[in-house]
Image 1 (cartoon, helix red, strand yellow):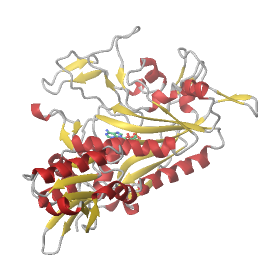
Image 2 (cartoon, rainbow, N blue to C red; image 1 turned 180 degrees about the vertical axis):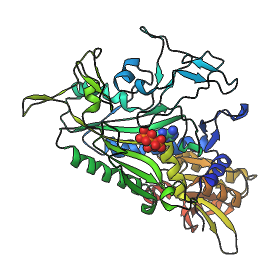
Image 3 (tube, helix red, strand yellow; image 1 turned 45 degrees about the vertical axis):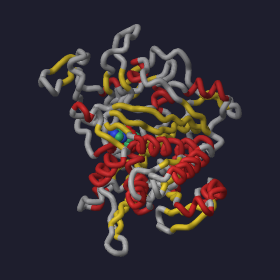
Image 4 (cartoon, rainbow, N blue to C red; image 1 turned 180 degrees about the horizontal axis):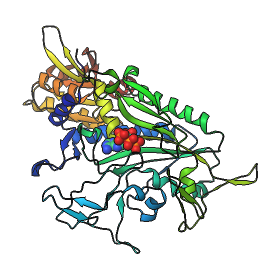
Length: 455
Ligand code: ATP
């Protein structure tokens, strides 16, 4: 038995259509990856399960999908713009330096990284804007939530505590994108801003850490591969009261065990920093003591506490994870190379069935026998029509090749239609993990899979 390394995952992902190098046809673009047919299913499942656990299964959450392009003032008053330290950009091809607004021929930019507040990528070409023609690609989705706090509050009549969840793209000019989808320039985040009364923040923070850890376990991450790192005072962002990073074992090949684990998600107590910045008459406070009064916000973003009859600024607990890193963690955790009896090798993804890109593959044993193919296609159609069982018709090779392919995709069940099926209306079902096979009547298939997959 052997486990995963990122290199092994890269090759499986390309081979089976999970991920391809971005713009590969033209030599690629560093720090970008395109999700293929299997990858998009897996990634969508990751997002769906996150949304389901964090929005639908709770009573205290709302969703949001804010625009990527935002008024520049959002990033001014969040403190980000001040940290976009280098107003020049370097063109990697001609090695020349250009002002922050490069023309279309010099799109690839390199800019400095700042320790905690993140770099954003300027939009190229520029988005016309009333005051100035600069807009930034957002470095995190969170700001879209903060600037909509009052809108959500007023439109839903929520009382504290409550949270807002959002999934969306974020962009960072990482100097060295590397390790596959672990560090890229364009990625997706799944973020929650959970608003609480000051004083209730510590307990809520602890609860979110526990909830997020159990979500990873629920969908198959092995407990030994997930660690917590409680940030020390000198690691914390200046506005944060506490932050616990969840680290996944992305680099098992590293000798030093501590270095094997890197961040997959951060869960921070951001105090009232964000809503104090983004409010009419508010103030942005930097680590060095500088202050910028907010002279632009058009409304107050405070909460009226009915019981105490006071306006207060809520504290924020923020669980923030990257979809791509989480997807990579699920892939790595599911990966296994097995040596079977007789020395045969097989590679299998033991994905939680809810994550599997395909739930059932239907394989006709004889590709040239129209009656068998017709039965297989009908089964595929019937299962797919339930809306819950993504089913694939697979006649890509002999049965062994089909099983190998489905194992590497992580398909929990293969259904084989053979000559006997035409006589007895039964098919063979093979279980991905145990490789056990059993005969099941075709008219029982739906209920069989619903039961086995707990749907
Ligand atoms: P790192 O220290 O690894 O750069 P970070 O502390 O800057 O990460 P956060 O700002 O806390 O990351 O972002 C929240 C999450 O977004 C991270 O836990 C990670 O999953 C994801 N993320 C951040 N940067 C990238 C990136 N360049 N590529 C892919 N995912 C990223």
